[in-house]
Length: 444
Image 1: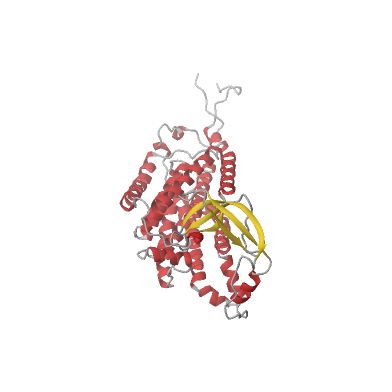
Image 2: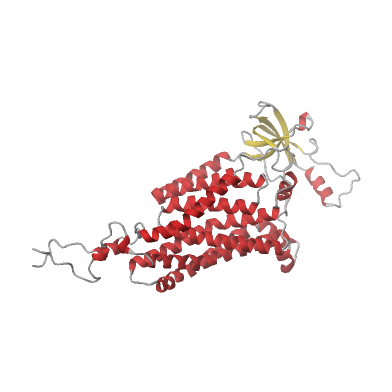
């Protein structure tokens, strides 16, 4: 007799479709061995690279007192009073009295109106409690107000009344509050995945600050350091956020291949275009303090690390698309899976490349404004080293991103199609009835 309709037996294939957005299904023992044979040596090489290149801390140096290389303390504005700028000698008109130059005109303008005379107290360091006076001109972009927290620079070799000066305002609280809101939103929306994403973010920041930056300052090859550090970040972030499974492993392989492509293209074109990497005051200061650093290599390292975050997103998305397509139709072969998933990837490519280009353009917007003011031609702007660096960085990163889509999609399609369900531990799907059946007869 047939089984009673009041107590039907469940159909295995129905549950596969209902839970299509759940965790990735386990793959066969055979496939796990193949993936492990590739990833275990790679992970071992990353660990060995970390151990060999580990810097043991940032090397010390004698402070130059220039730019960021200054000793700083925390301060607080005790009071601010308005005074005539002429009375506080806000700026000196040139001795010749010539006001036809921009400097002369600026000096004259700075002596007009009311300046702010701020009394600032040092609240940290060996001179805690000491006060000094800071003059703020009326057109200064940063105005001080009573009770405001500030960052003060200390110059031990200067005259006593000039040893301290205000260099910035204290932004600790708004930045910390914004970071807290970000973390809360991630956890509320992402739940456990959000928590793991925050842990991965902290781990990535630790690798960057404890390994990549100090190792480069120690004189290690920036390209090698960037590859090892980026690989460590990739392994930690992907496996923490997406779990230790075959789907994540395929995303790791796709990301690795794309990073290698970015590294090769970067090495070729940064050298070919003669980009020195030393284009502004900050890079010049780094070169002056640590002459042994390869600045063009540092530029390449920045390209690799900057591309990693977007690469992770693309490779994980493509791998998940292939896996979900396979679960929806297990009969699809690798070619059909690739064709279906690559259509999703093309949409992703368009949005990601545009995002990357706009991100770099936004970062370089003040520089582009300067070229616009100078009325330079497009060719002159594009081939100047400052802009050429951003163009090369953007194009190399975009090529790596675009290449990651077909590479990761092909890998995922091959892996998921090569799976052997009968080899899975505890898998009885091989004995399941053909799709479309109405159930099995129960023996009496």
